[in-house]
Amino acid sequence: MKSKVLVSLLSDGQVHSGERLARELGVSRTAVWKQVRRALDEGYEIDTVRGRGYRLVTPVDLLDADTILAGLAEPARNRIALTVLDEVDSTNTEVLRQISKGATGVPVAIADSQTKGRGRRGKPWRSPRGENLYLSAGLTFHGGFSVLDGLSLVLGVAVAETLEGLGVPGVRLKWPNDIFLPDGKLGGILVELQGELQEGVVRVIAGIGINVHMSRADDVDQPWASLDQISSQADWSRNRIASALINALLESAETFAEKGFSFFQESWQARDMFKGRHLVAQGGEVIGVGCGIDGQGNYLVEGVSGVVAIRAGEISLRVAL
Ligand code: BTN
Image 1 (cartoon, rainbow, N blue to C red):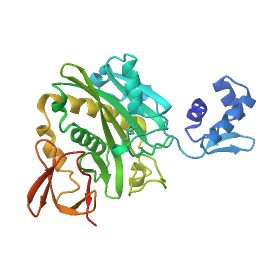
Image 2: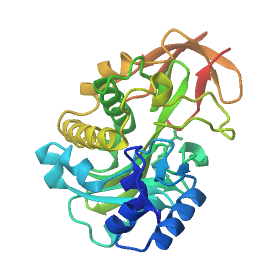
Image 3: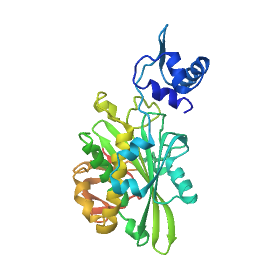
Image 4: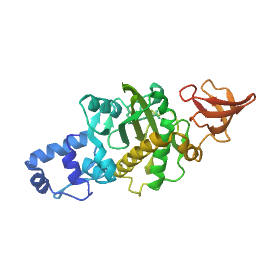
């Protein structure tokens, strides 16, 4: 975002004179006008108040690395290598790039927009500029791939608890790890395996997308929700949500490595969106009633021939209408 400094100066919603902006930006008044034009092209709504200056009409919620770092608990602040970008293909891919450049610590990437945001099952993830949170972290575990069973559900619990801690009511988890509010999907988690680094050391890239300010999404094919829909008055600052999420991700990953999935099983079940509902599989056939998860994070469905455990990635489930 080329006009970021200008937009941050205007972010208080007050009228700023061209002269003052020119001074603060260290440029001429003509250059200020050019920056205003550029910001308008980037989608910001800026009013020219005749004889007085410029005013940002719609509030902005700018990402800022220092603010995010300041909101972290000390252990997380010391452990992460944070990259905050205006635009990126995908924050998951950015974390991989950071790793190949030799990032030390836990690489975390956050972007204002993604041009190739990825969802689960090869779907694109809508990633408009300035509206939502797109965050990825590279997490390392010891003990081979088998220790990762249930990790994506654990991350779902971490996201749900974080949102609840920030005052979001009615958060539910749709197996394996979609984040739902009563009106629709609020967020999703994409866990990608990077592979075995050395004997038994495995790394995953955990990407989280949360709809924060999104107000329209014509091309999304399912009911969706955003935090602004709960209350547009609340301060859903992306920096604050990002700090809280990073704290929770690191803490949960550590607990998961120490205690395994069973430690999180109850917390996941308590938010289970499928519990007691008739479920249909991908093809549309009803397969039974949702009964929660087992100790490995498989989803249990009670059908005519008893309870069947479904592994994540095997079939996608939804509630029968
Ligand atoms: C889903 O399909 O529910 C998972 C969506 C995951 C989206 C996030 S946004 C940050 C990270 N970068 C991506 O390209 N995808 C994930």
